[in-house]
Image 1 (tube, rainbow, N blue to C red):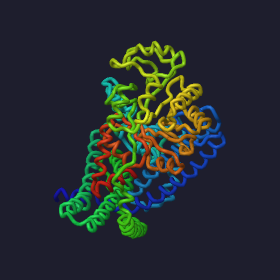
Image 2 (image 1 turned 30 degrees about the vertical axis):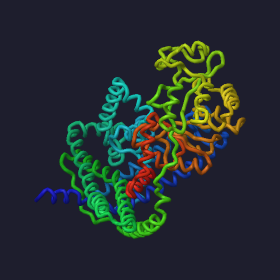
Image 3 (image 1 turned 90 degrees about the vertical axis):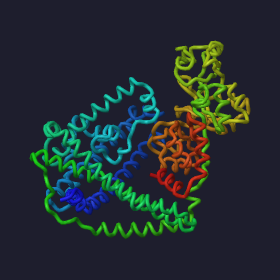
Image 4 (image 1 turned 135 degrees about the horizontal axis):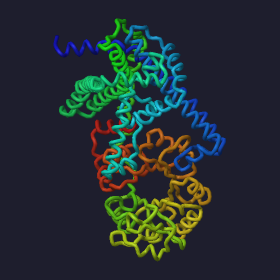
Length: 587
């Protein structure tokens, strides 16, 4: 028997399980979507009762200081338990039934997964849920719930870690610890759901099973993932990349090449969605087979069973084919509108001139202007004698070697400091230098970012008649809300690392999103409220390209010249590149 035949025999039970997995996935996705919808409505009611429209990183204390905030946290914790039960425990029940030959019954999966929640209502269960929901997606070990599977360390944190050998080494050690913990406890939920054990007993059993089999477990995981990946890649090469390459080589007229490109790209998207739909259930099925194998001491084979109900399969196939055909005609007729060549995103230099200029200096501003930036983001703080000077950190230690804070110094003392041979500028000096050339996105920073700073800065902007050339931004929502309420003619922007609720309804002109939270849905919601979107701080080429294609209004970056070059490159893309960029943006 050749290798291909052996692979086919090994994969056949998984392929025969696809109809049941499909039916299960559709049903659970609908229920989970309904739960999230209802939960969101409850959260909105709780927020409105406090006069808020959203919870952000600028107002997180609310969650611990009001009964509404505490209730939201409790509901969020309950939701994590429900998600684990629905998204993982029920898949384990499904896997057990598929392996042992039982007929698929969605009601049984739901019932047993709900009953398993009771065993998790203890400190050990809470730790398991936290690991699955928050740690597993970041570490990349084991399974995670669909709600948080895209979770990862924000760029502003990862960049600090990567920039320090000590931090990188410490992060590596932490990952290895979590990796070991994840593998050792991989079968906790299986022991709890399948064997009816308590969390403590299931943890002991998991470690007992993994200890003599950890090498085989890792090898089996790698082989399974490589096999599935190879199948997906092979399908993509045969049915997507080769046809698209052939279209390019033949140099067909656009009336022919464009519809064909649309068809094959849509087919590729469909394959990607199917891989996402079946990926996690198939992986859990494989892990469950290993659980039975290690328990009995020999390979556990699938019980003989007939393929599941394929009616839903057939209906979905017909609907999908109809959607693809209709989509081809619609997309082809509106191609240039759906996939524009140009971008209207404005490039804003971070901390004056980004990496190409001295931080928060007049020369940095000049560098941003010469590079072609639309704006320059600067940070201001108040001195002891009431002047406003530029500085990002709490002290001047990093940029000027002085560990004093701006509020501890007079403006005369600050002016004696040197940033690579250049004095620290005042806000007025930056206004004069930027007038008529570049827009100042001025962040009200640090301990002195209060209502007095707001009043003073507005007064200075008015004095220089630069209301249209200056946007006041801050991480402190109360300050931005104060400016927008009392000085509506001044442009304002609120910066947030993360938020929940109707962020788009916040009282400001711009909403600045950290790049991980700047999803297509969040951007569309903000635009629908008539507000503008800033994204910060996108420095990697891929990240910049992504946001240049999303339709955000401003991109704050340290790599200004790179972003400007990308703007030009986007105008020269092929039909295929335009489609792929748009699809990646949406997904």
